[in-house]
Amino acid sequence: MKRRVTLKDIAAEVGVHVSTVSRALDPVLSSTITPEVVSRIRATAEQLGYRPNRIAAGLRTNRTMTVGVMIPDITNVIFPPILRGIEGVLEPLGYATIIVNTDSEAERENRLLNVLRDRGVDGIVHAAVLLSDPCIAHVAEDGLPVITLNRRIENSRIPYIINDEEAGIRGMLQHLMDLGHRQIAHLAGPQELSTGQLRLAAFHKVAAELGLDRDELQIAEARRFDEAEGSHCAQQLLRGGRPFTAILGANDRLALGAIEGLRAHGISCPEDVSVTGFNDMCFLDLIRPRLTTVRIQKYDAGRTAAQLLLKLMASGGGDVPLETVLPVEIVIRESTARCPELDHRRRRGGLARI
Image: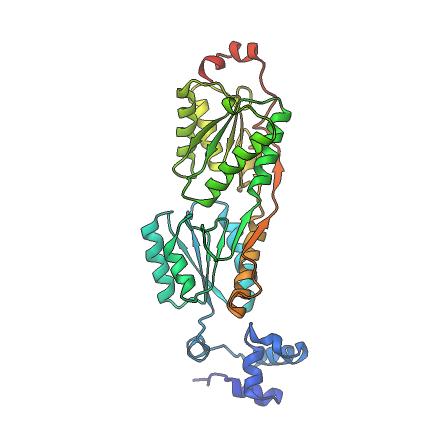
């Protein structure tokens, strides 16, 4: 059987000390050596067919070269580009990612958190945290590097990456007002999640700043960020009997569900009611009407999370900002239109239902 190539073999071939080879092949420590030496050592390792012994290296360095990524819903299509962004940074450096799905259940999240700790991950990117999440807070306090993505934990020092929620809500409210809408309903996300809370707070703040009449605004709070809840909330608004000409959804899935809920009552989007979303998830171009929404930087969010986690693992957090806010973009498609005239809505039978 062919003998396994060792660091000593590479060191002898290149003419350097074994410790230099070890540092050159380490994605974190290689920066302490000149690029020319690193390149020469890595080329030699490739030529000799060197494959690192991760178990032995882990025992030596107390690192496993694995990172845990926690997501709340594996069926949500906003996460593949986020995961690609994370892996795009970590994989070239030799890290493997372990992806776990929490289903937004606190008990399941805690169980999977323990699984990741038992596997000895070097850090965690957590995209499924609740607004109050003591378990992950304790993990971070114990010294495991943690970055939260798309959400943050209240009263915590865990670094987080979020979208500019207020800018997104402001842009969308302004777009609806430019179309003549004043009676606007907001399908708010779950309030135990920072995303739902921040977007609802932004809706109240921006609506007041833009001079919208508070009495003409309506709120329906969803229990989950999914289509079924969007439909349920839209029908709840209809049962309330107060008029509205536009719905601003806290995410795309709520917005798509709302369109279906309206359609079930014979109400058309955007002819009777305009509907908007948030996130710009994949495949929206394939669904009619094509959804007007707020685009977040999904791939860049993943890359940023991975880069900050690497810094946190290397430095212990000294140069990692507590808050990173990513810009958003308003994407106007077919689900929004000018506010219908009163007689137009009456002719369509929408006024009695809206």
